[in-house]
Length: 284
Image 1 (cartoon, rainbow, N blue to C red):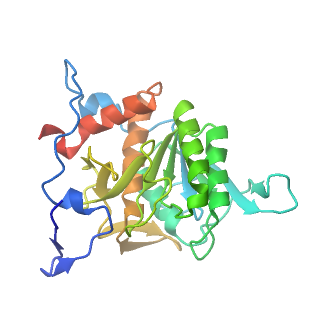
Image 2 (image 1 turned 90 degrees about the vertical axis):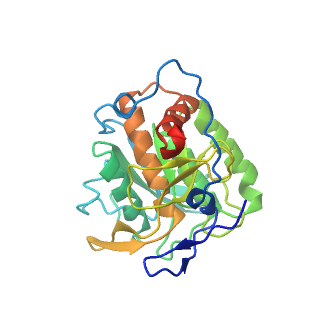
């Protein structure tokens, strides 16, 4: 892959989050040929574009359900380390706050795209946006066990010891028809489970129009979506302008919520096929 230099509004080179470069050049390559007799249109794929009834979990730092750009949270769970329990964690089900702002940002993106999705806040990160891989894994397992259709993972672990555990979780999620949308790390390092083929792995594409996203058949970042210079919800009922693959992932989660709201019986591979047909580069 050739080097790609993206420039900001002032004409100076803009540093892109890792894995985003391919979406800013001309080397994506052709998308997979779906071999269909009729094209998949956005009207068919999205239905009323509401995401109605689709349970979408935000596994993150919590979600401020009172933020006007979030518009409510259907369910909360915090996974807390507790050595006195058999599982080593406890599950706190009462409403909680966002300890950082990151989860609220992701939830707001999803809500903007799928306004009637049922948002579920699964808090696994603390006030420093840090957490243990074990708690993260328990959060994914909770989603598998509790009827989540789509889980947004704008976080990952570099801990190799947890690779096998997350491989198992990704496989189990696929068998249960739960879609895992996972942001690639912003630096080139291990990104577990984001780099696994069984998740919808996401990095930043160009622009800020969240109706536009890209499919990369060569991976490891399979999908590109806006995440650079984007406005997102934040704590204190505020908004910020920020960059990162974290904010591209919920764009894909939101589009999938629309698709699953219109077609709730799709398997993971079918949802992936439909999503690919709607990508910006689908007509190339």
